[in-house]
Image (cartoon, rainbow, N blue to C red; front, side):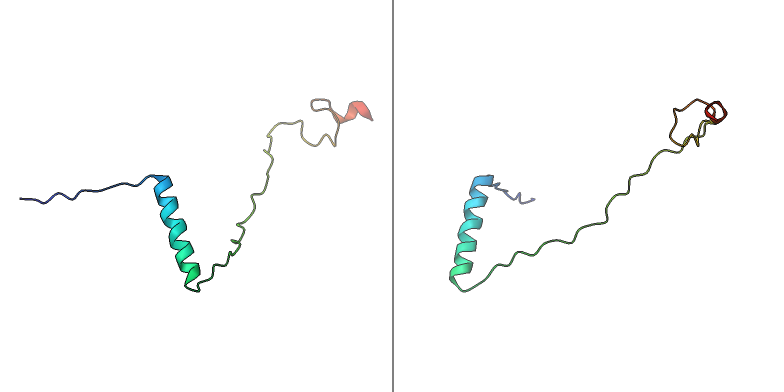
Length: 71
């Protein structure tokens, strides 16, 4: 016969209380806790979409107007 194990789950509040008590006990015994900042990951670079239309290179004018009309 197989022996079934009984698993007990604790609530978040109960885990929080147990953790708090364990930390207090650790600090009473002379332990110390130091908070270390994590390293920042690489930043995402914003890139614009490349258009494959003939209206590129307008140098700031409205898109769709040919350059020759403003000369």
